[in-house]
Image (cartoon, rainbow, N blue to C red; front, side):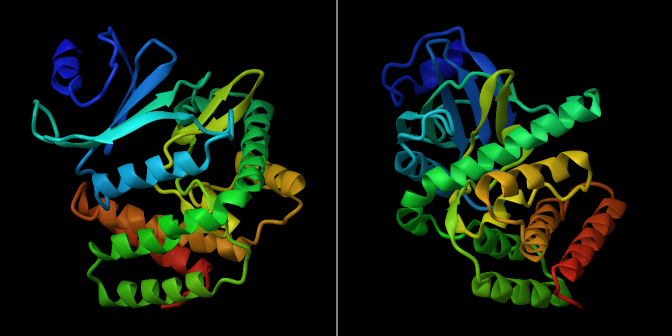
Length: 295
């Protein structure tokens, strides 16, 4: 950790010397607990789809727009870009964000299956309620967030850079048209709500982290990772509808699932066993069909 501190201390003002604790690591970077009530998020230049620079910009801009939503998302304390992305060992870095450390931990999907059914449902209800509150509290910033674009349309465009099949590309173009024409109020979207981006602690409201895909669009976009049916997903939908007063439009939800399937195919297109690629293609084909985009 001292090597990392020495390498980036000139770019990140007031950086504690450590020791730090690694809280998480993904394809786009890592998050470190600085043990002073803040965390440091390092964003790599390269990872999945898109660029690290664009993700750093969106998350920084989104958190600035959401400043004042205490507890719903972490407060942005400072941020910046790296002057020399190759100034140290490891993948090149695009930028950094110093954030308020939230109480609780990211939800561990693997541990969910060790919970009793009623405990999983309760967590689902908490997630649905927290998302409804987030959409409601952030709506005054939605017009300003339009500069961040549509997470769904952006994801389709990024996925199509790695999908060459003419038939799938034609269907994804039709999905883009449906997406742009969807007759639904636009809200401020987190853009990437999956369980690893949900922070939960007993007795505290659920919060959301990692807003690198933030933007504006219809509310159902923020459910696109919850494609597996079951009591927990039902609890999320039921709670969101009860708190927001708006029913989930299942066709728009399935459009979001289709986008997620396209992203999964694009990211995994050159990895894994050929059967995995076939499975991803089949999943996208079925997701598009359920969204109303026939072959």
